[in-house]
Image 1 (tube, rainbow, N blue to C red):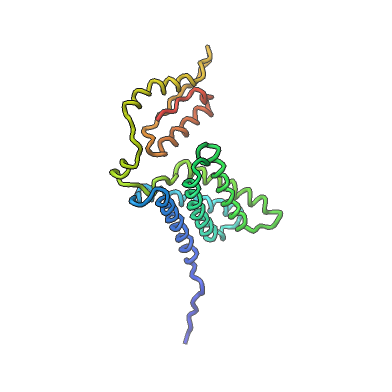
Image 2 (cartoon, one colour):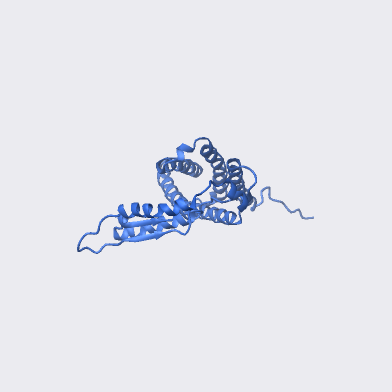
Length: 247
């Protein structure tokens, strides 16, 4: 009579736990947005797709970083702990945004808060490596660079801002009233201010002037693309003071 031994741990269990941690991070984001905006909203299909893409980019970054330092065996554990940490950070940052919105009033403030969150996540990944002292710096730098690059891609192209939205009728009620006539009347003044800020042309020198219009300011993706496109002629043709950013 033969006896078949059953392994104590299924090979697929760490992957399932990691997947569960990713889902928990999505649920934490939804819970945080519900706590900030209040009940009555609904889950956005577009937001879910963006969250899936965002998570995929982060996992790809972890695969790249861990492969470079020769510790791909830590992938499932890294995904699990990192996304659980992201869940906690989401709740904390949304609470901070609700209780102390003045901290987010400037780009510098947002940058400091975002930088602190990134440092906590990098510290977790470096701690997981537990490399010997002489290898710690190299492994930590590799993971930090790859992780920050991954987060830059995530924030620029896969920022999850509409995972929880309100139906159109409700959103109209909670939005502040807008006087369309006042906005139209202000266009000449606003455009004049933009044009006055442009650097003057240098006589006899070929220079690049670039308008970068965004279709709407209702979704951050359009403003993100405006800023991204504006950076190209600014960096390559020196058009930083000769670019109109319009939305």
